[in-house]
Image (cartoon, each protein chain N blue to C red):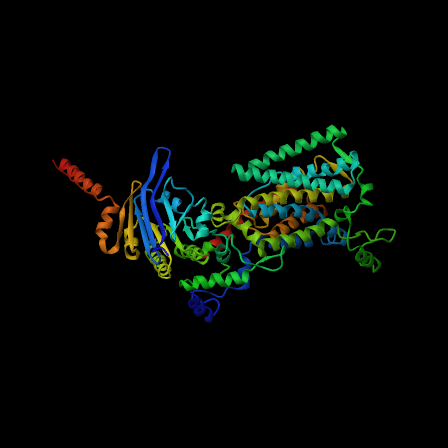
Length: 375
Length: 264
């Protein structure tokens, strides 16, 4: 064997095949799952650049506004994308957002827990919910669509019932005062790069309030988390063993199991991932608003899945990318905010959302065929 | 050391009242290709699953290199060097050649907790290994879906060998392939055996089995009709054993009868 491999080694690393055409960078790019979402984002920006370029949509304040919306959606879309690549759905993301919100608010307001402890508690509950979703799907072999649809109702119902039982209402306000001295709340509630915006303001490069402070005060925490998550998720998917297992679990469960991939463990961890992403979403929103609402996050699971699909994830699993999902979220966030700057009635937003998804699915189907049948 | 790489002695397997296998014996030497032939329902699948640790035999013993062994799971069989390549090949067509080759056993590099999948090394090994069997992987990051059926089969076999298989169990490796593709795969199987592996080749195609096999075991209705070495067995005899010669003779008689009636 050793002699054989030597003889191969002495040749070029990859023997040249006369059938091999020069594959251009462009062609490689054309086969990437995130291509559609990247192109879509560019189109959306060009569109709003033309239609709403002079309305303030792309001022510092306007930009941060649509980035904030995109980032919030992106946080859950990336987790949803990873789970979809692993071959499963999580329809309970939206309900988990509501549930996590009251898991933070009720202990902090009614039980007198320090805020950091409530946040840790919410994440612990997320791990439990995710684990429960995962173990149920893996052990019963039922479609995750059904299992997590059940969880969607259970969590939303429990959120409403528990909140009303303890507080007599459906909203829990009063969190803002607790953020100040908390050791970890700043992670989810602080604008960053304030110095930059102050400086830009002093140079009169961005809009100012009448009192001379800049209108846009800093990068919202959601954007920082969103960028971090995109990088980490992409690194995991492309560069680690666990990433390969995610693709394998979604691509062919039986085959992956046969070659030793712990498919069950991979899937359970991905369900925990979506529940934790929902909790992160809830943390940021609850601390930003200063209150928890039992209906928070309604329908967010579908937006997250839509963003993942626009970003190139296949509904059948085994294919997709975190960067794609990030761009998918950026498209939705930009359009949902940008539409206010145009003359178009905002009622049309959902029409756009649906049409975008349809186009994405058709386009992604075409890409998949290119990838697997390029012979 | 034992003359045989692995011996399966008097293996029986029952499912409730159904006797799936009864007293099947097979012995494989190093460098030998043993063809396991049988019609549909002969018990081939049950036998493979028993050999590869999916089922536990109800009777009989498995002896690996002279030591009696019991497999509790497919992993036990794999650890000892008995690798099975099933018909579905355990390949994910949307994933790249390299990612498939190392699926579940990815080489890693880097510091603990931040280990990365060493894609460069994996690409190199995968391309080398495929190159050795004469398959130019034009680009190891291309999706397996772009490969031909024969190439995929070779990839699955090559992967099993790379990860230390001593005995290869191949389940119908040529059944879905055209003539040319099948011959590529068969050539590779012979090459693998010549490097000292034992191969159990399961097929119902005598024309594929006869040229490459050293010995032949024919299975019929859960029982072995015996193991024959090539010199004791002509292709025609194998064919007739395989098809259940008597049954074909009977069929011929019946056809004549029908013919006679329709003429009269």
